[in-house]
Image (tube, rainbow, N blue to C red; front, side, top):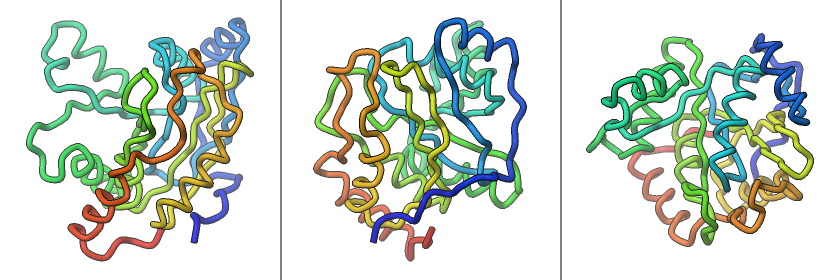
Length: 224
């Protein structure tokens, strides 16, 4: 059974962004679509990622929408003068080497801790993992959201229409194949900065097996 119907507005978590950032994006020809967040914790899935410009527009959209977004970066970057504090200010979290469960385990632990403390925590992930075209998506975003029991937001970074859309929220069902079919449909027609470098919206061949192992290691998976 695929993931449940989209979580629809009105959403309880409303944010106030920067009017200056909105005017800047508008001057560049971009529009943003955002109606708030359904929960205090979740995972932003940003697609496609084909250029360094994606980060520039994503940061501007982050300010324009008022979205506080955390993302993972190599721990060594945080040790670089000026660069480290800047990345942390943007929402960067240093990866912990040899963390139990790897990066997914670290992300799940952060989201669960936020839920216990009833605080805001939305993580931003690029499932392609690279700007170059690959055979498909890595499963980390799915494992993170499923194991943490939080919804995902399918963020469309569409250079063809010059739109950044963050309105598609879902709770995963645990059926990766069925859920990916819904996700692929949501991203139909989206165009990256370099369209030929966008990876197909399918999981890499080893992803289902890896996710199954992760679920077994966590015990009974939450129904979300």
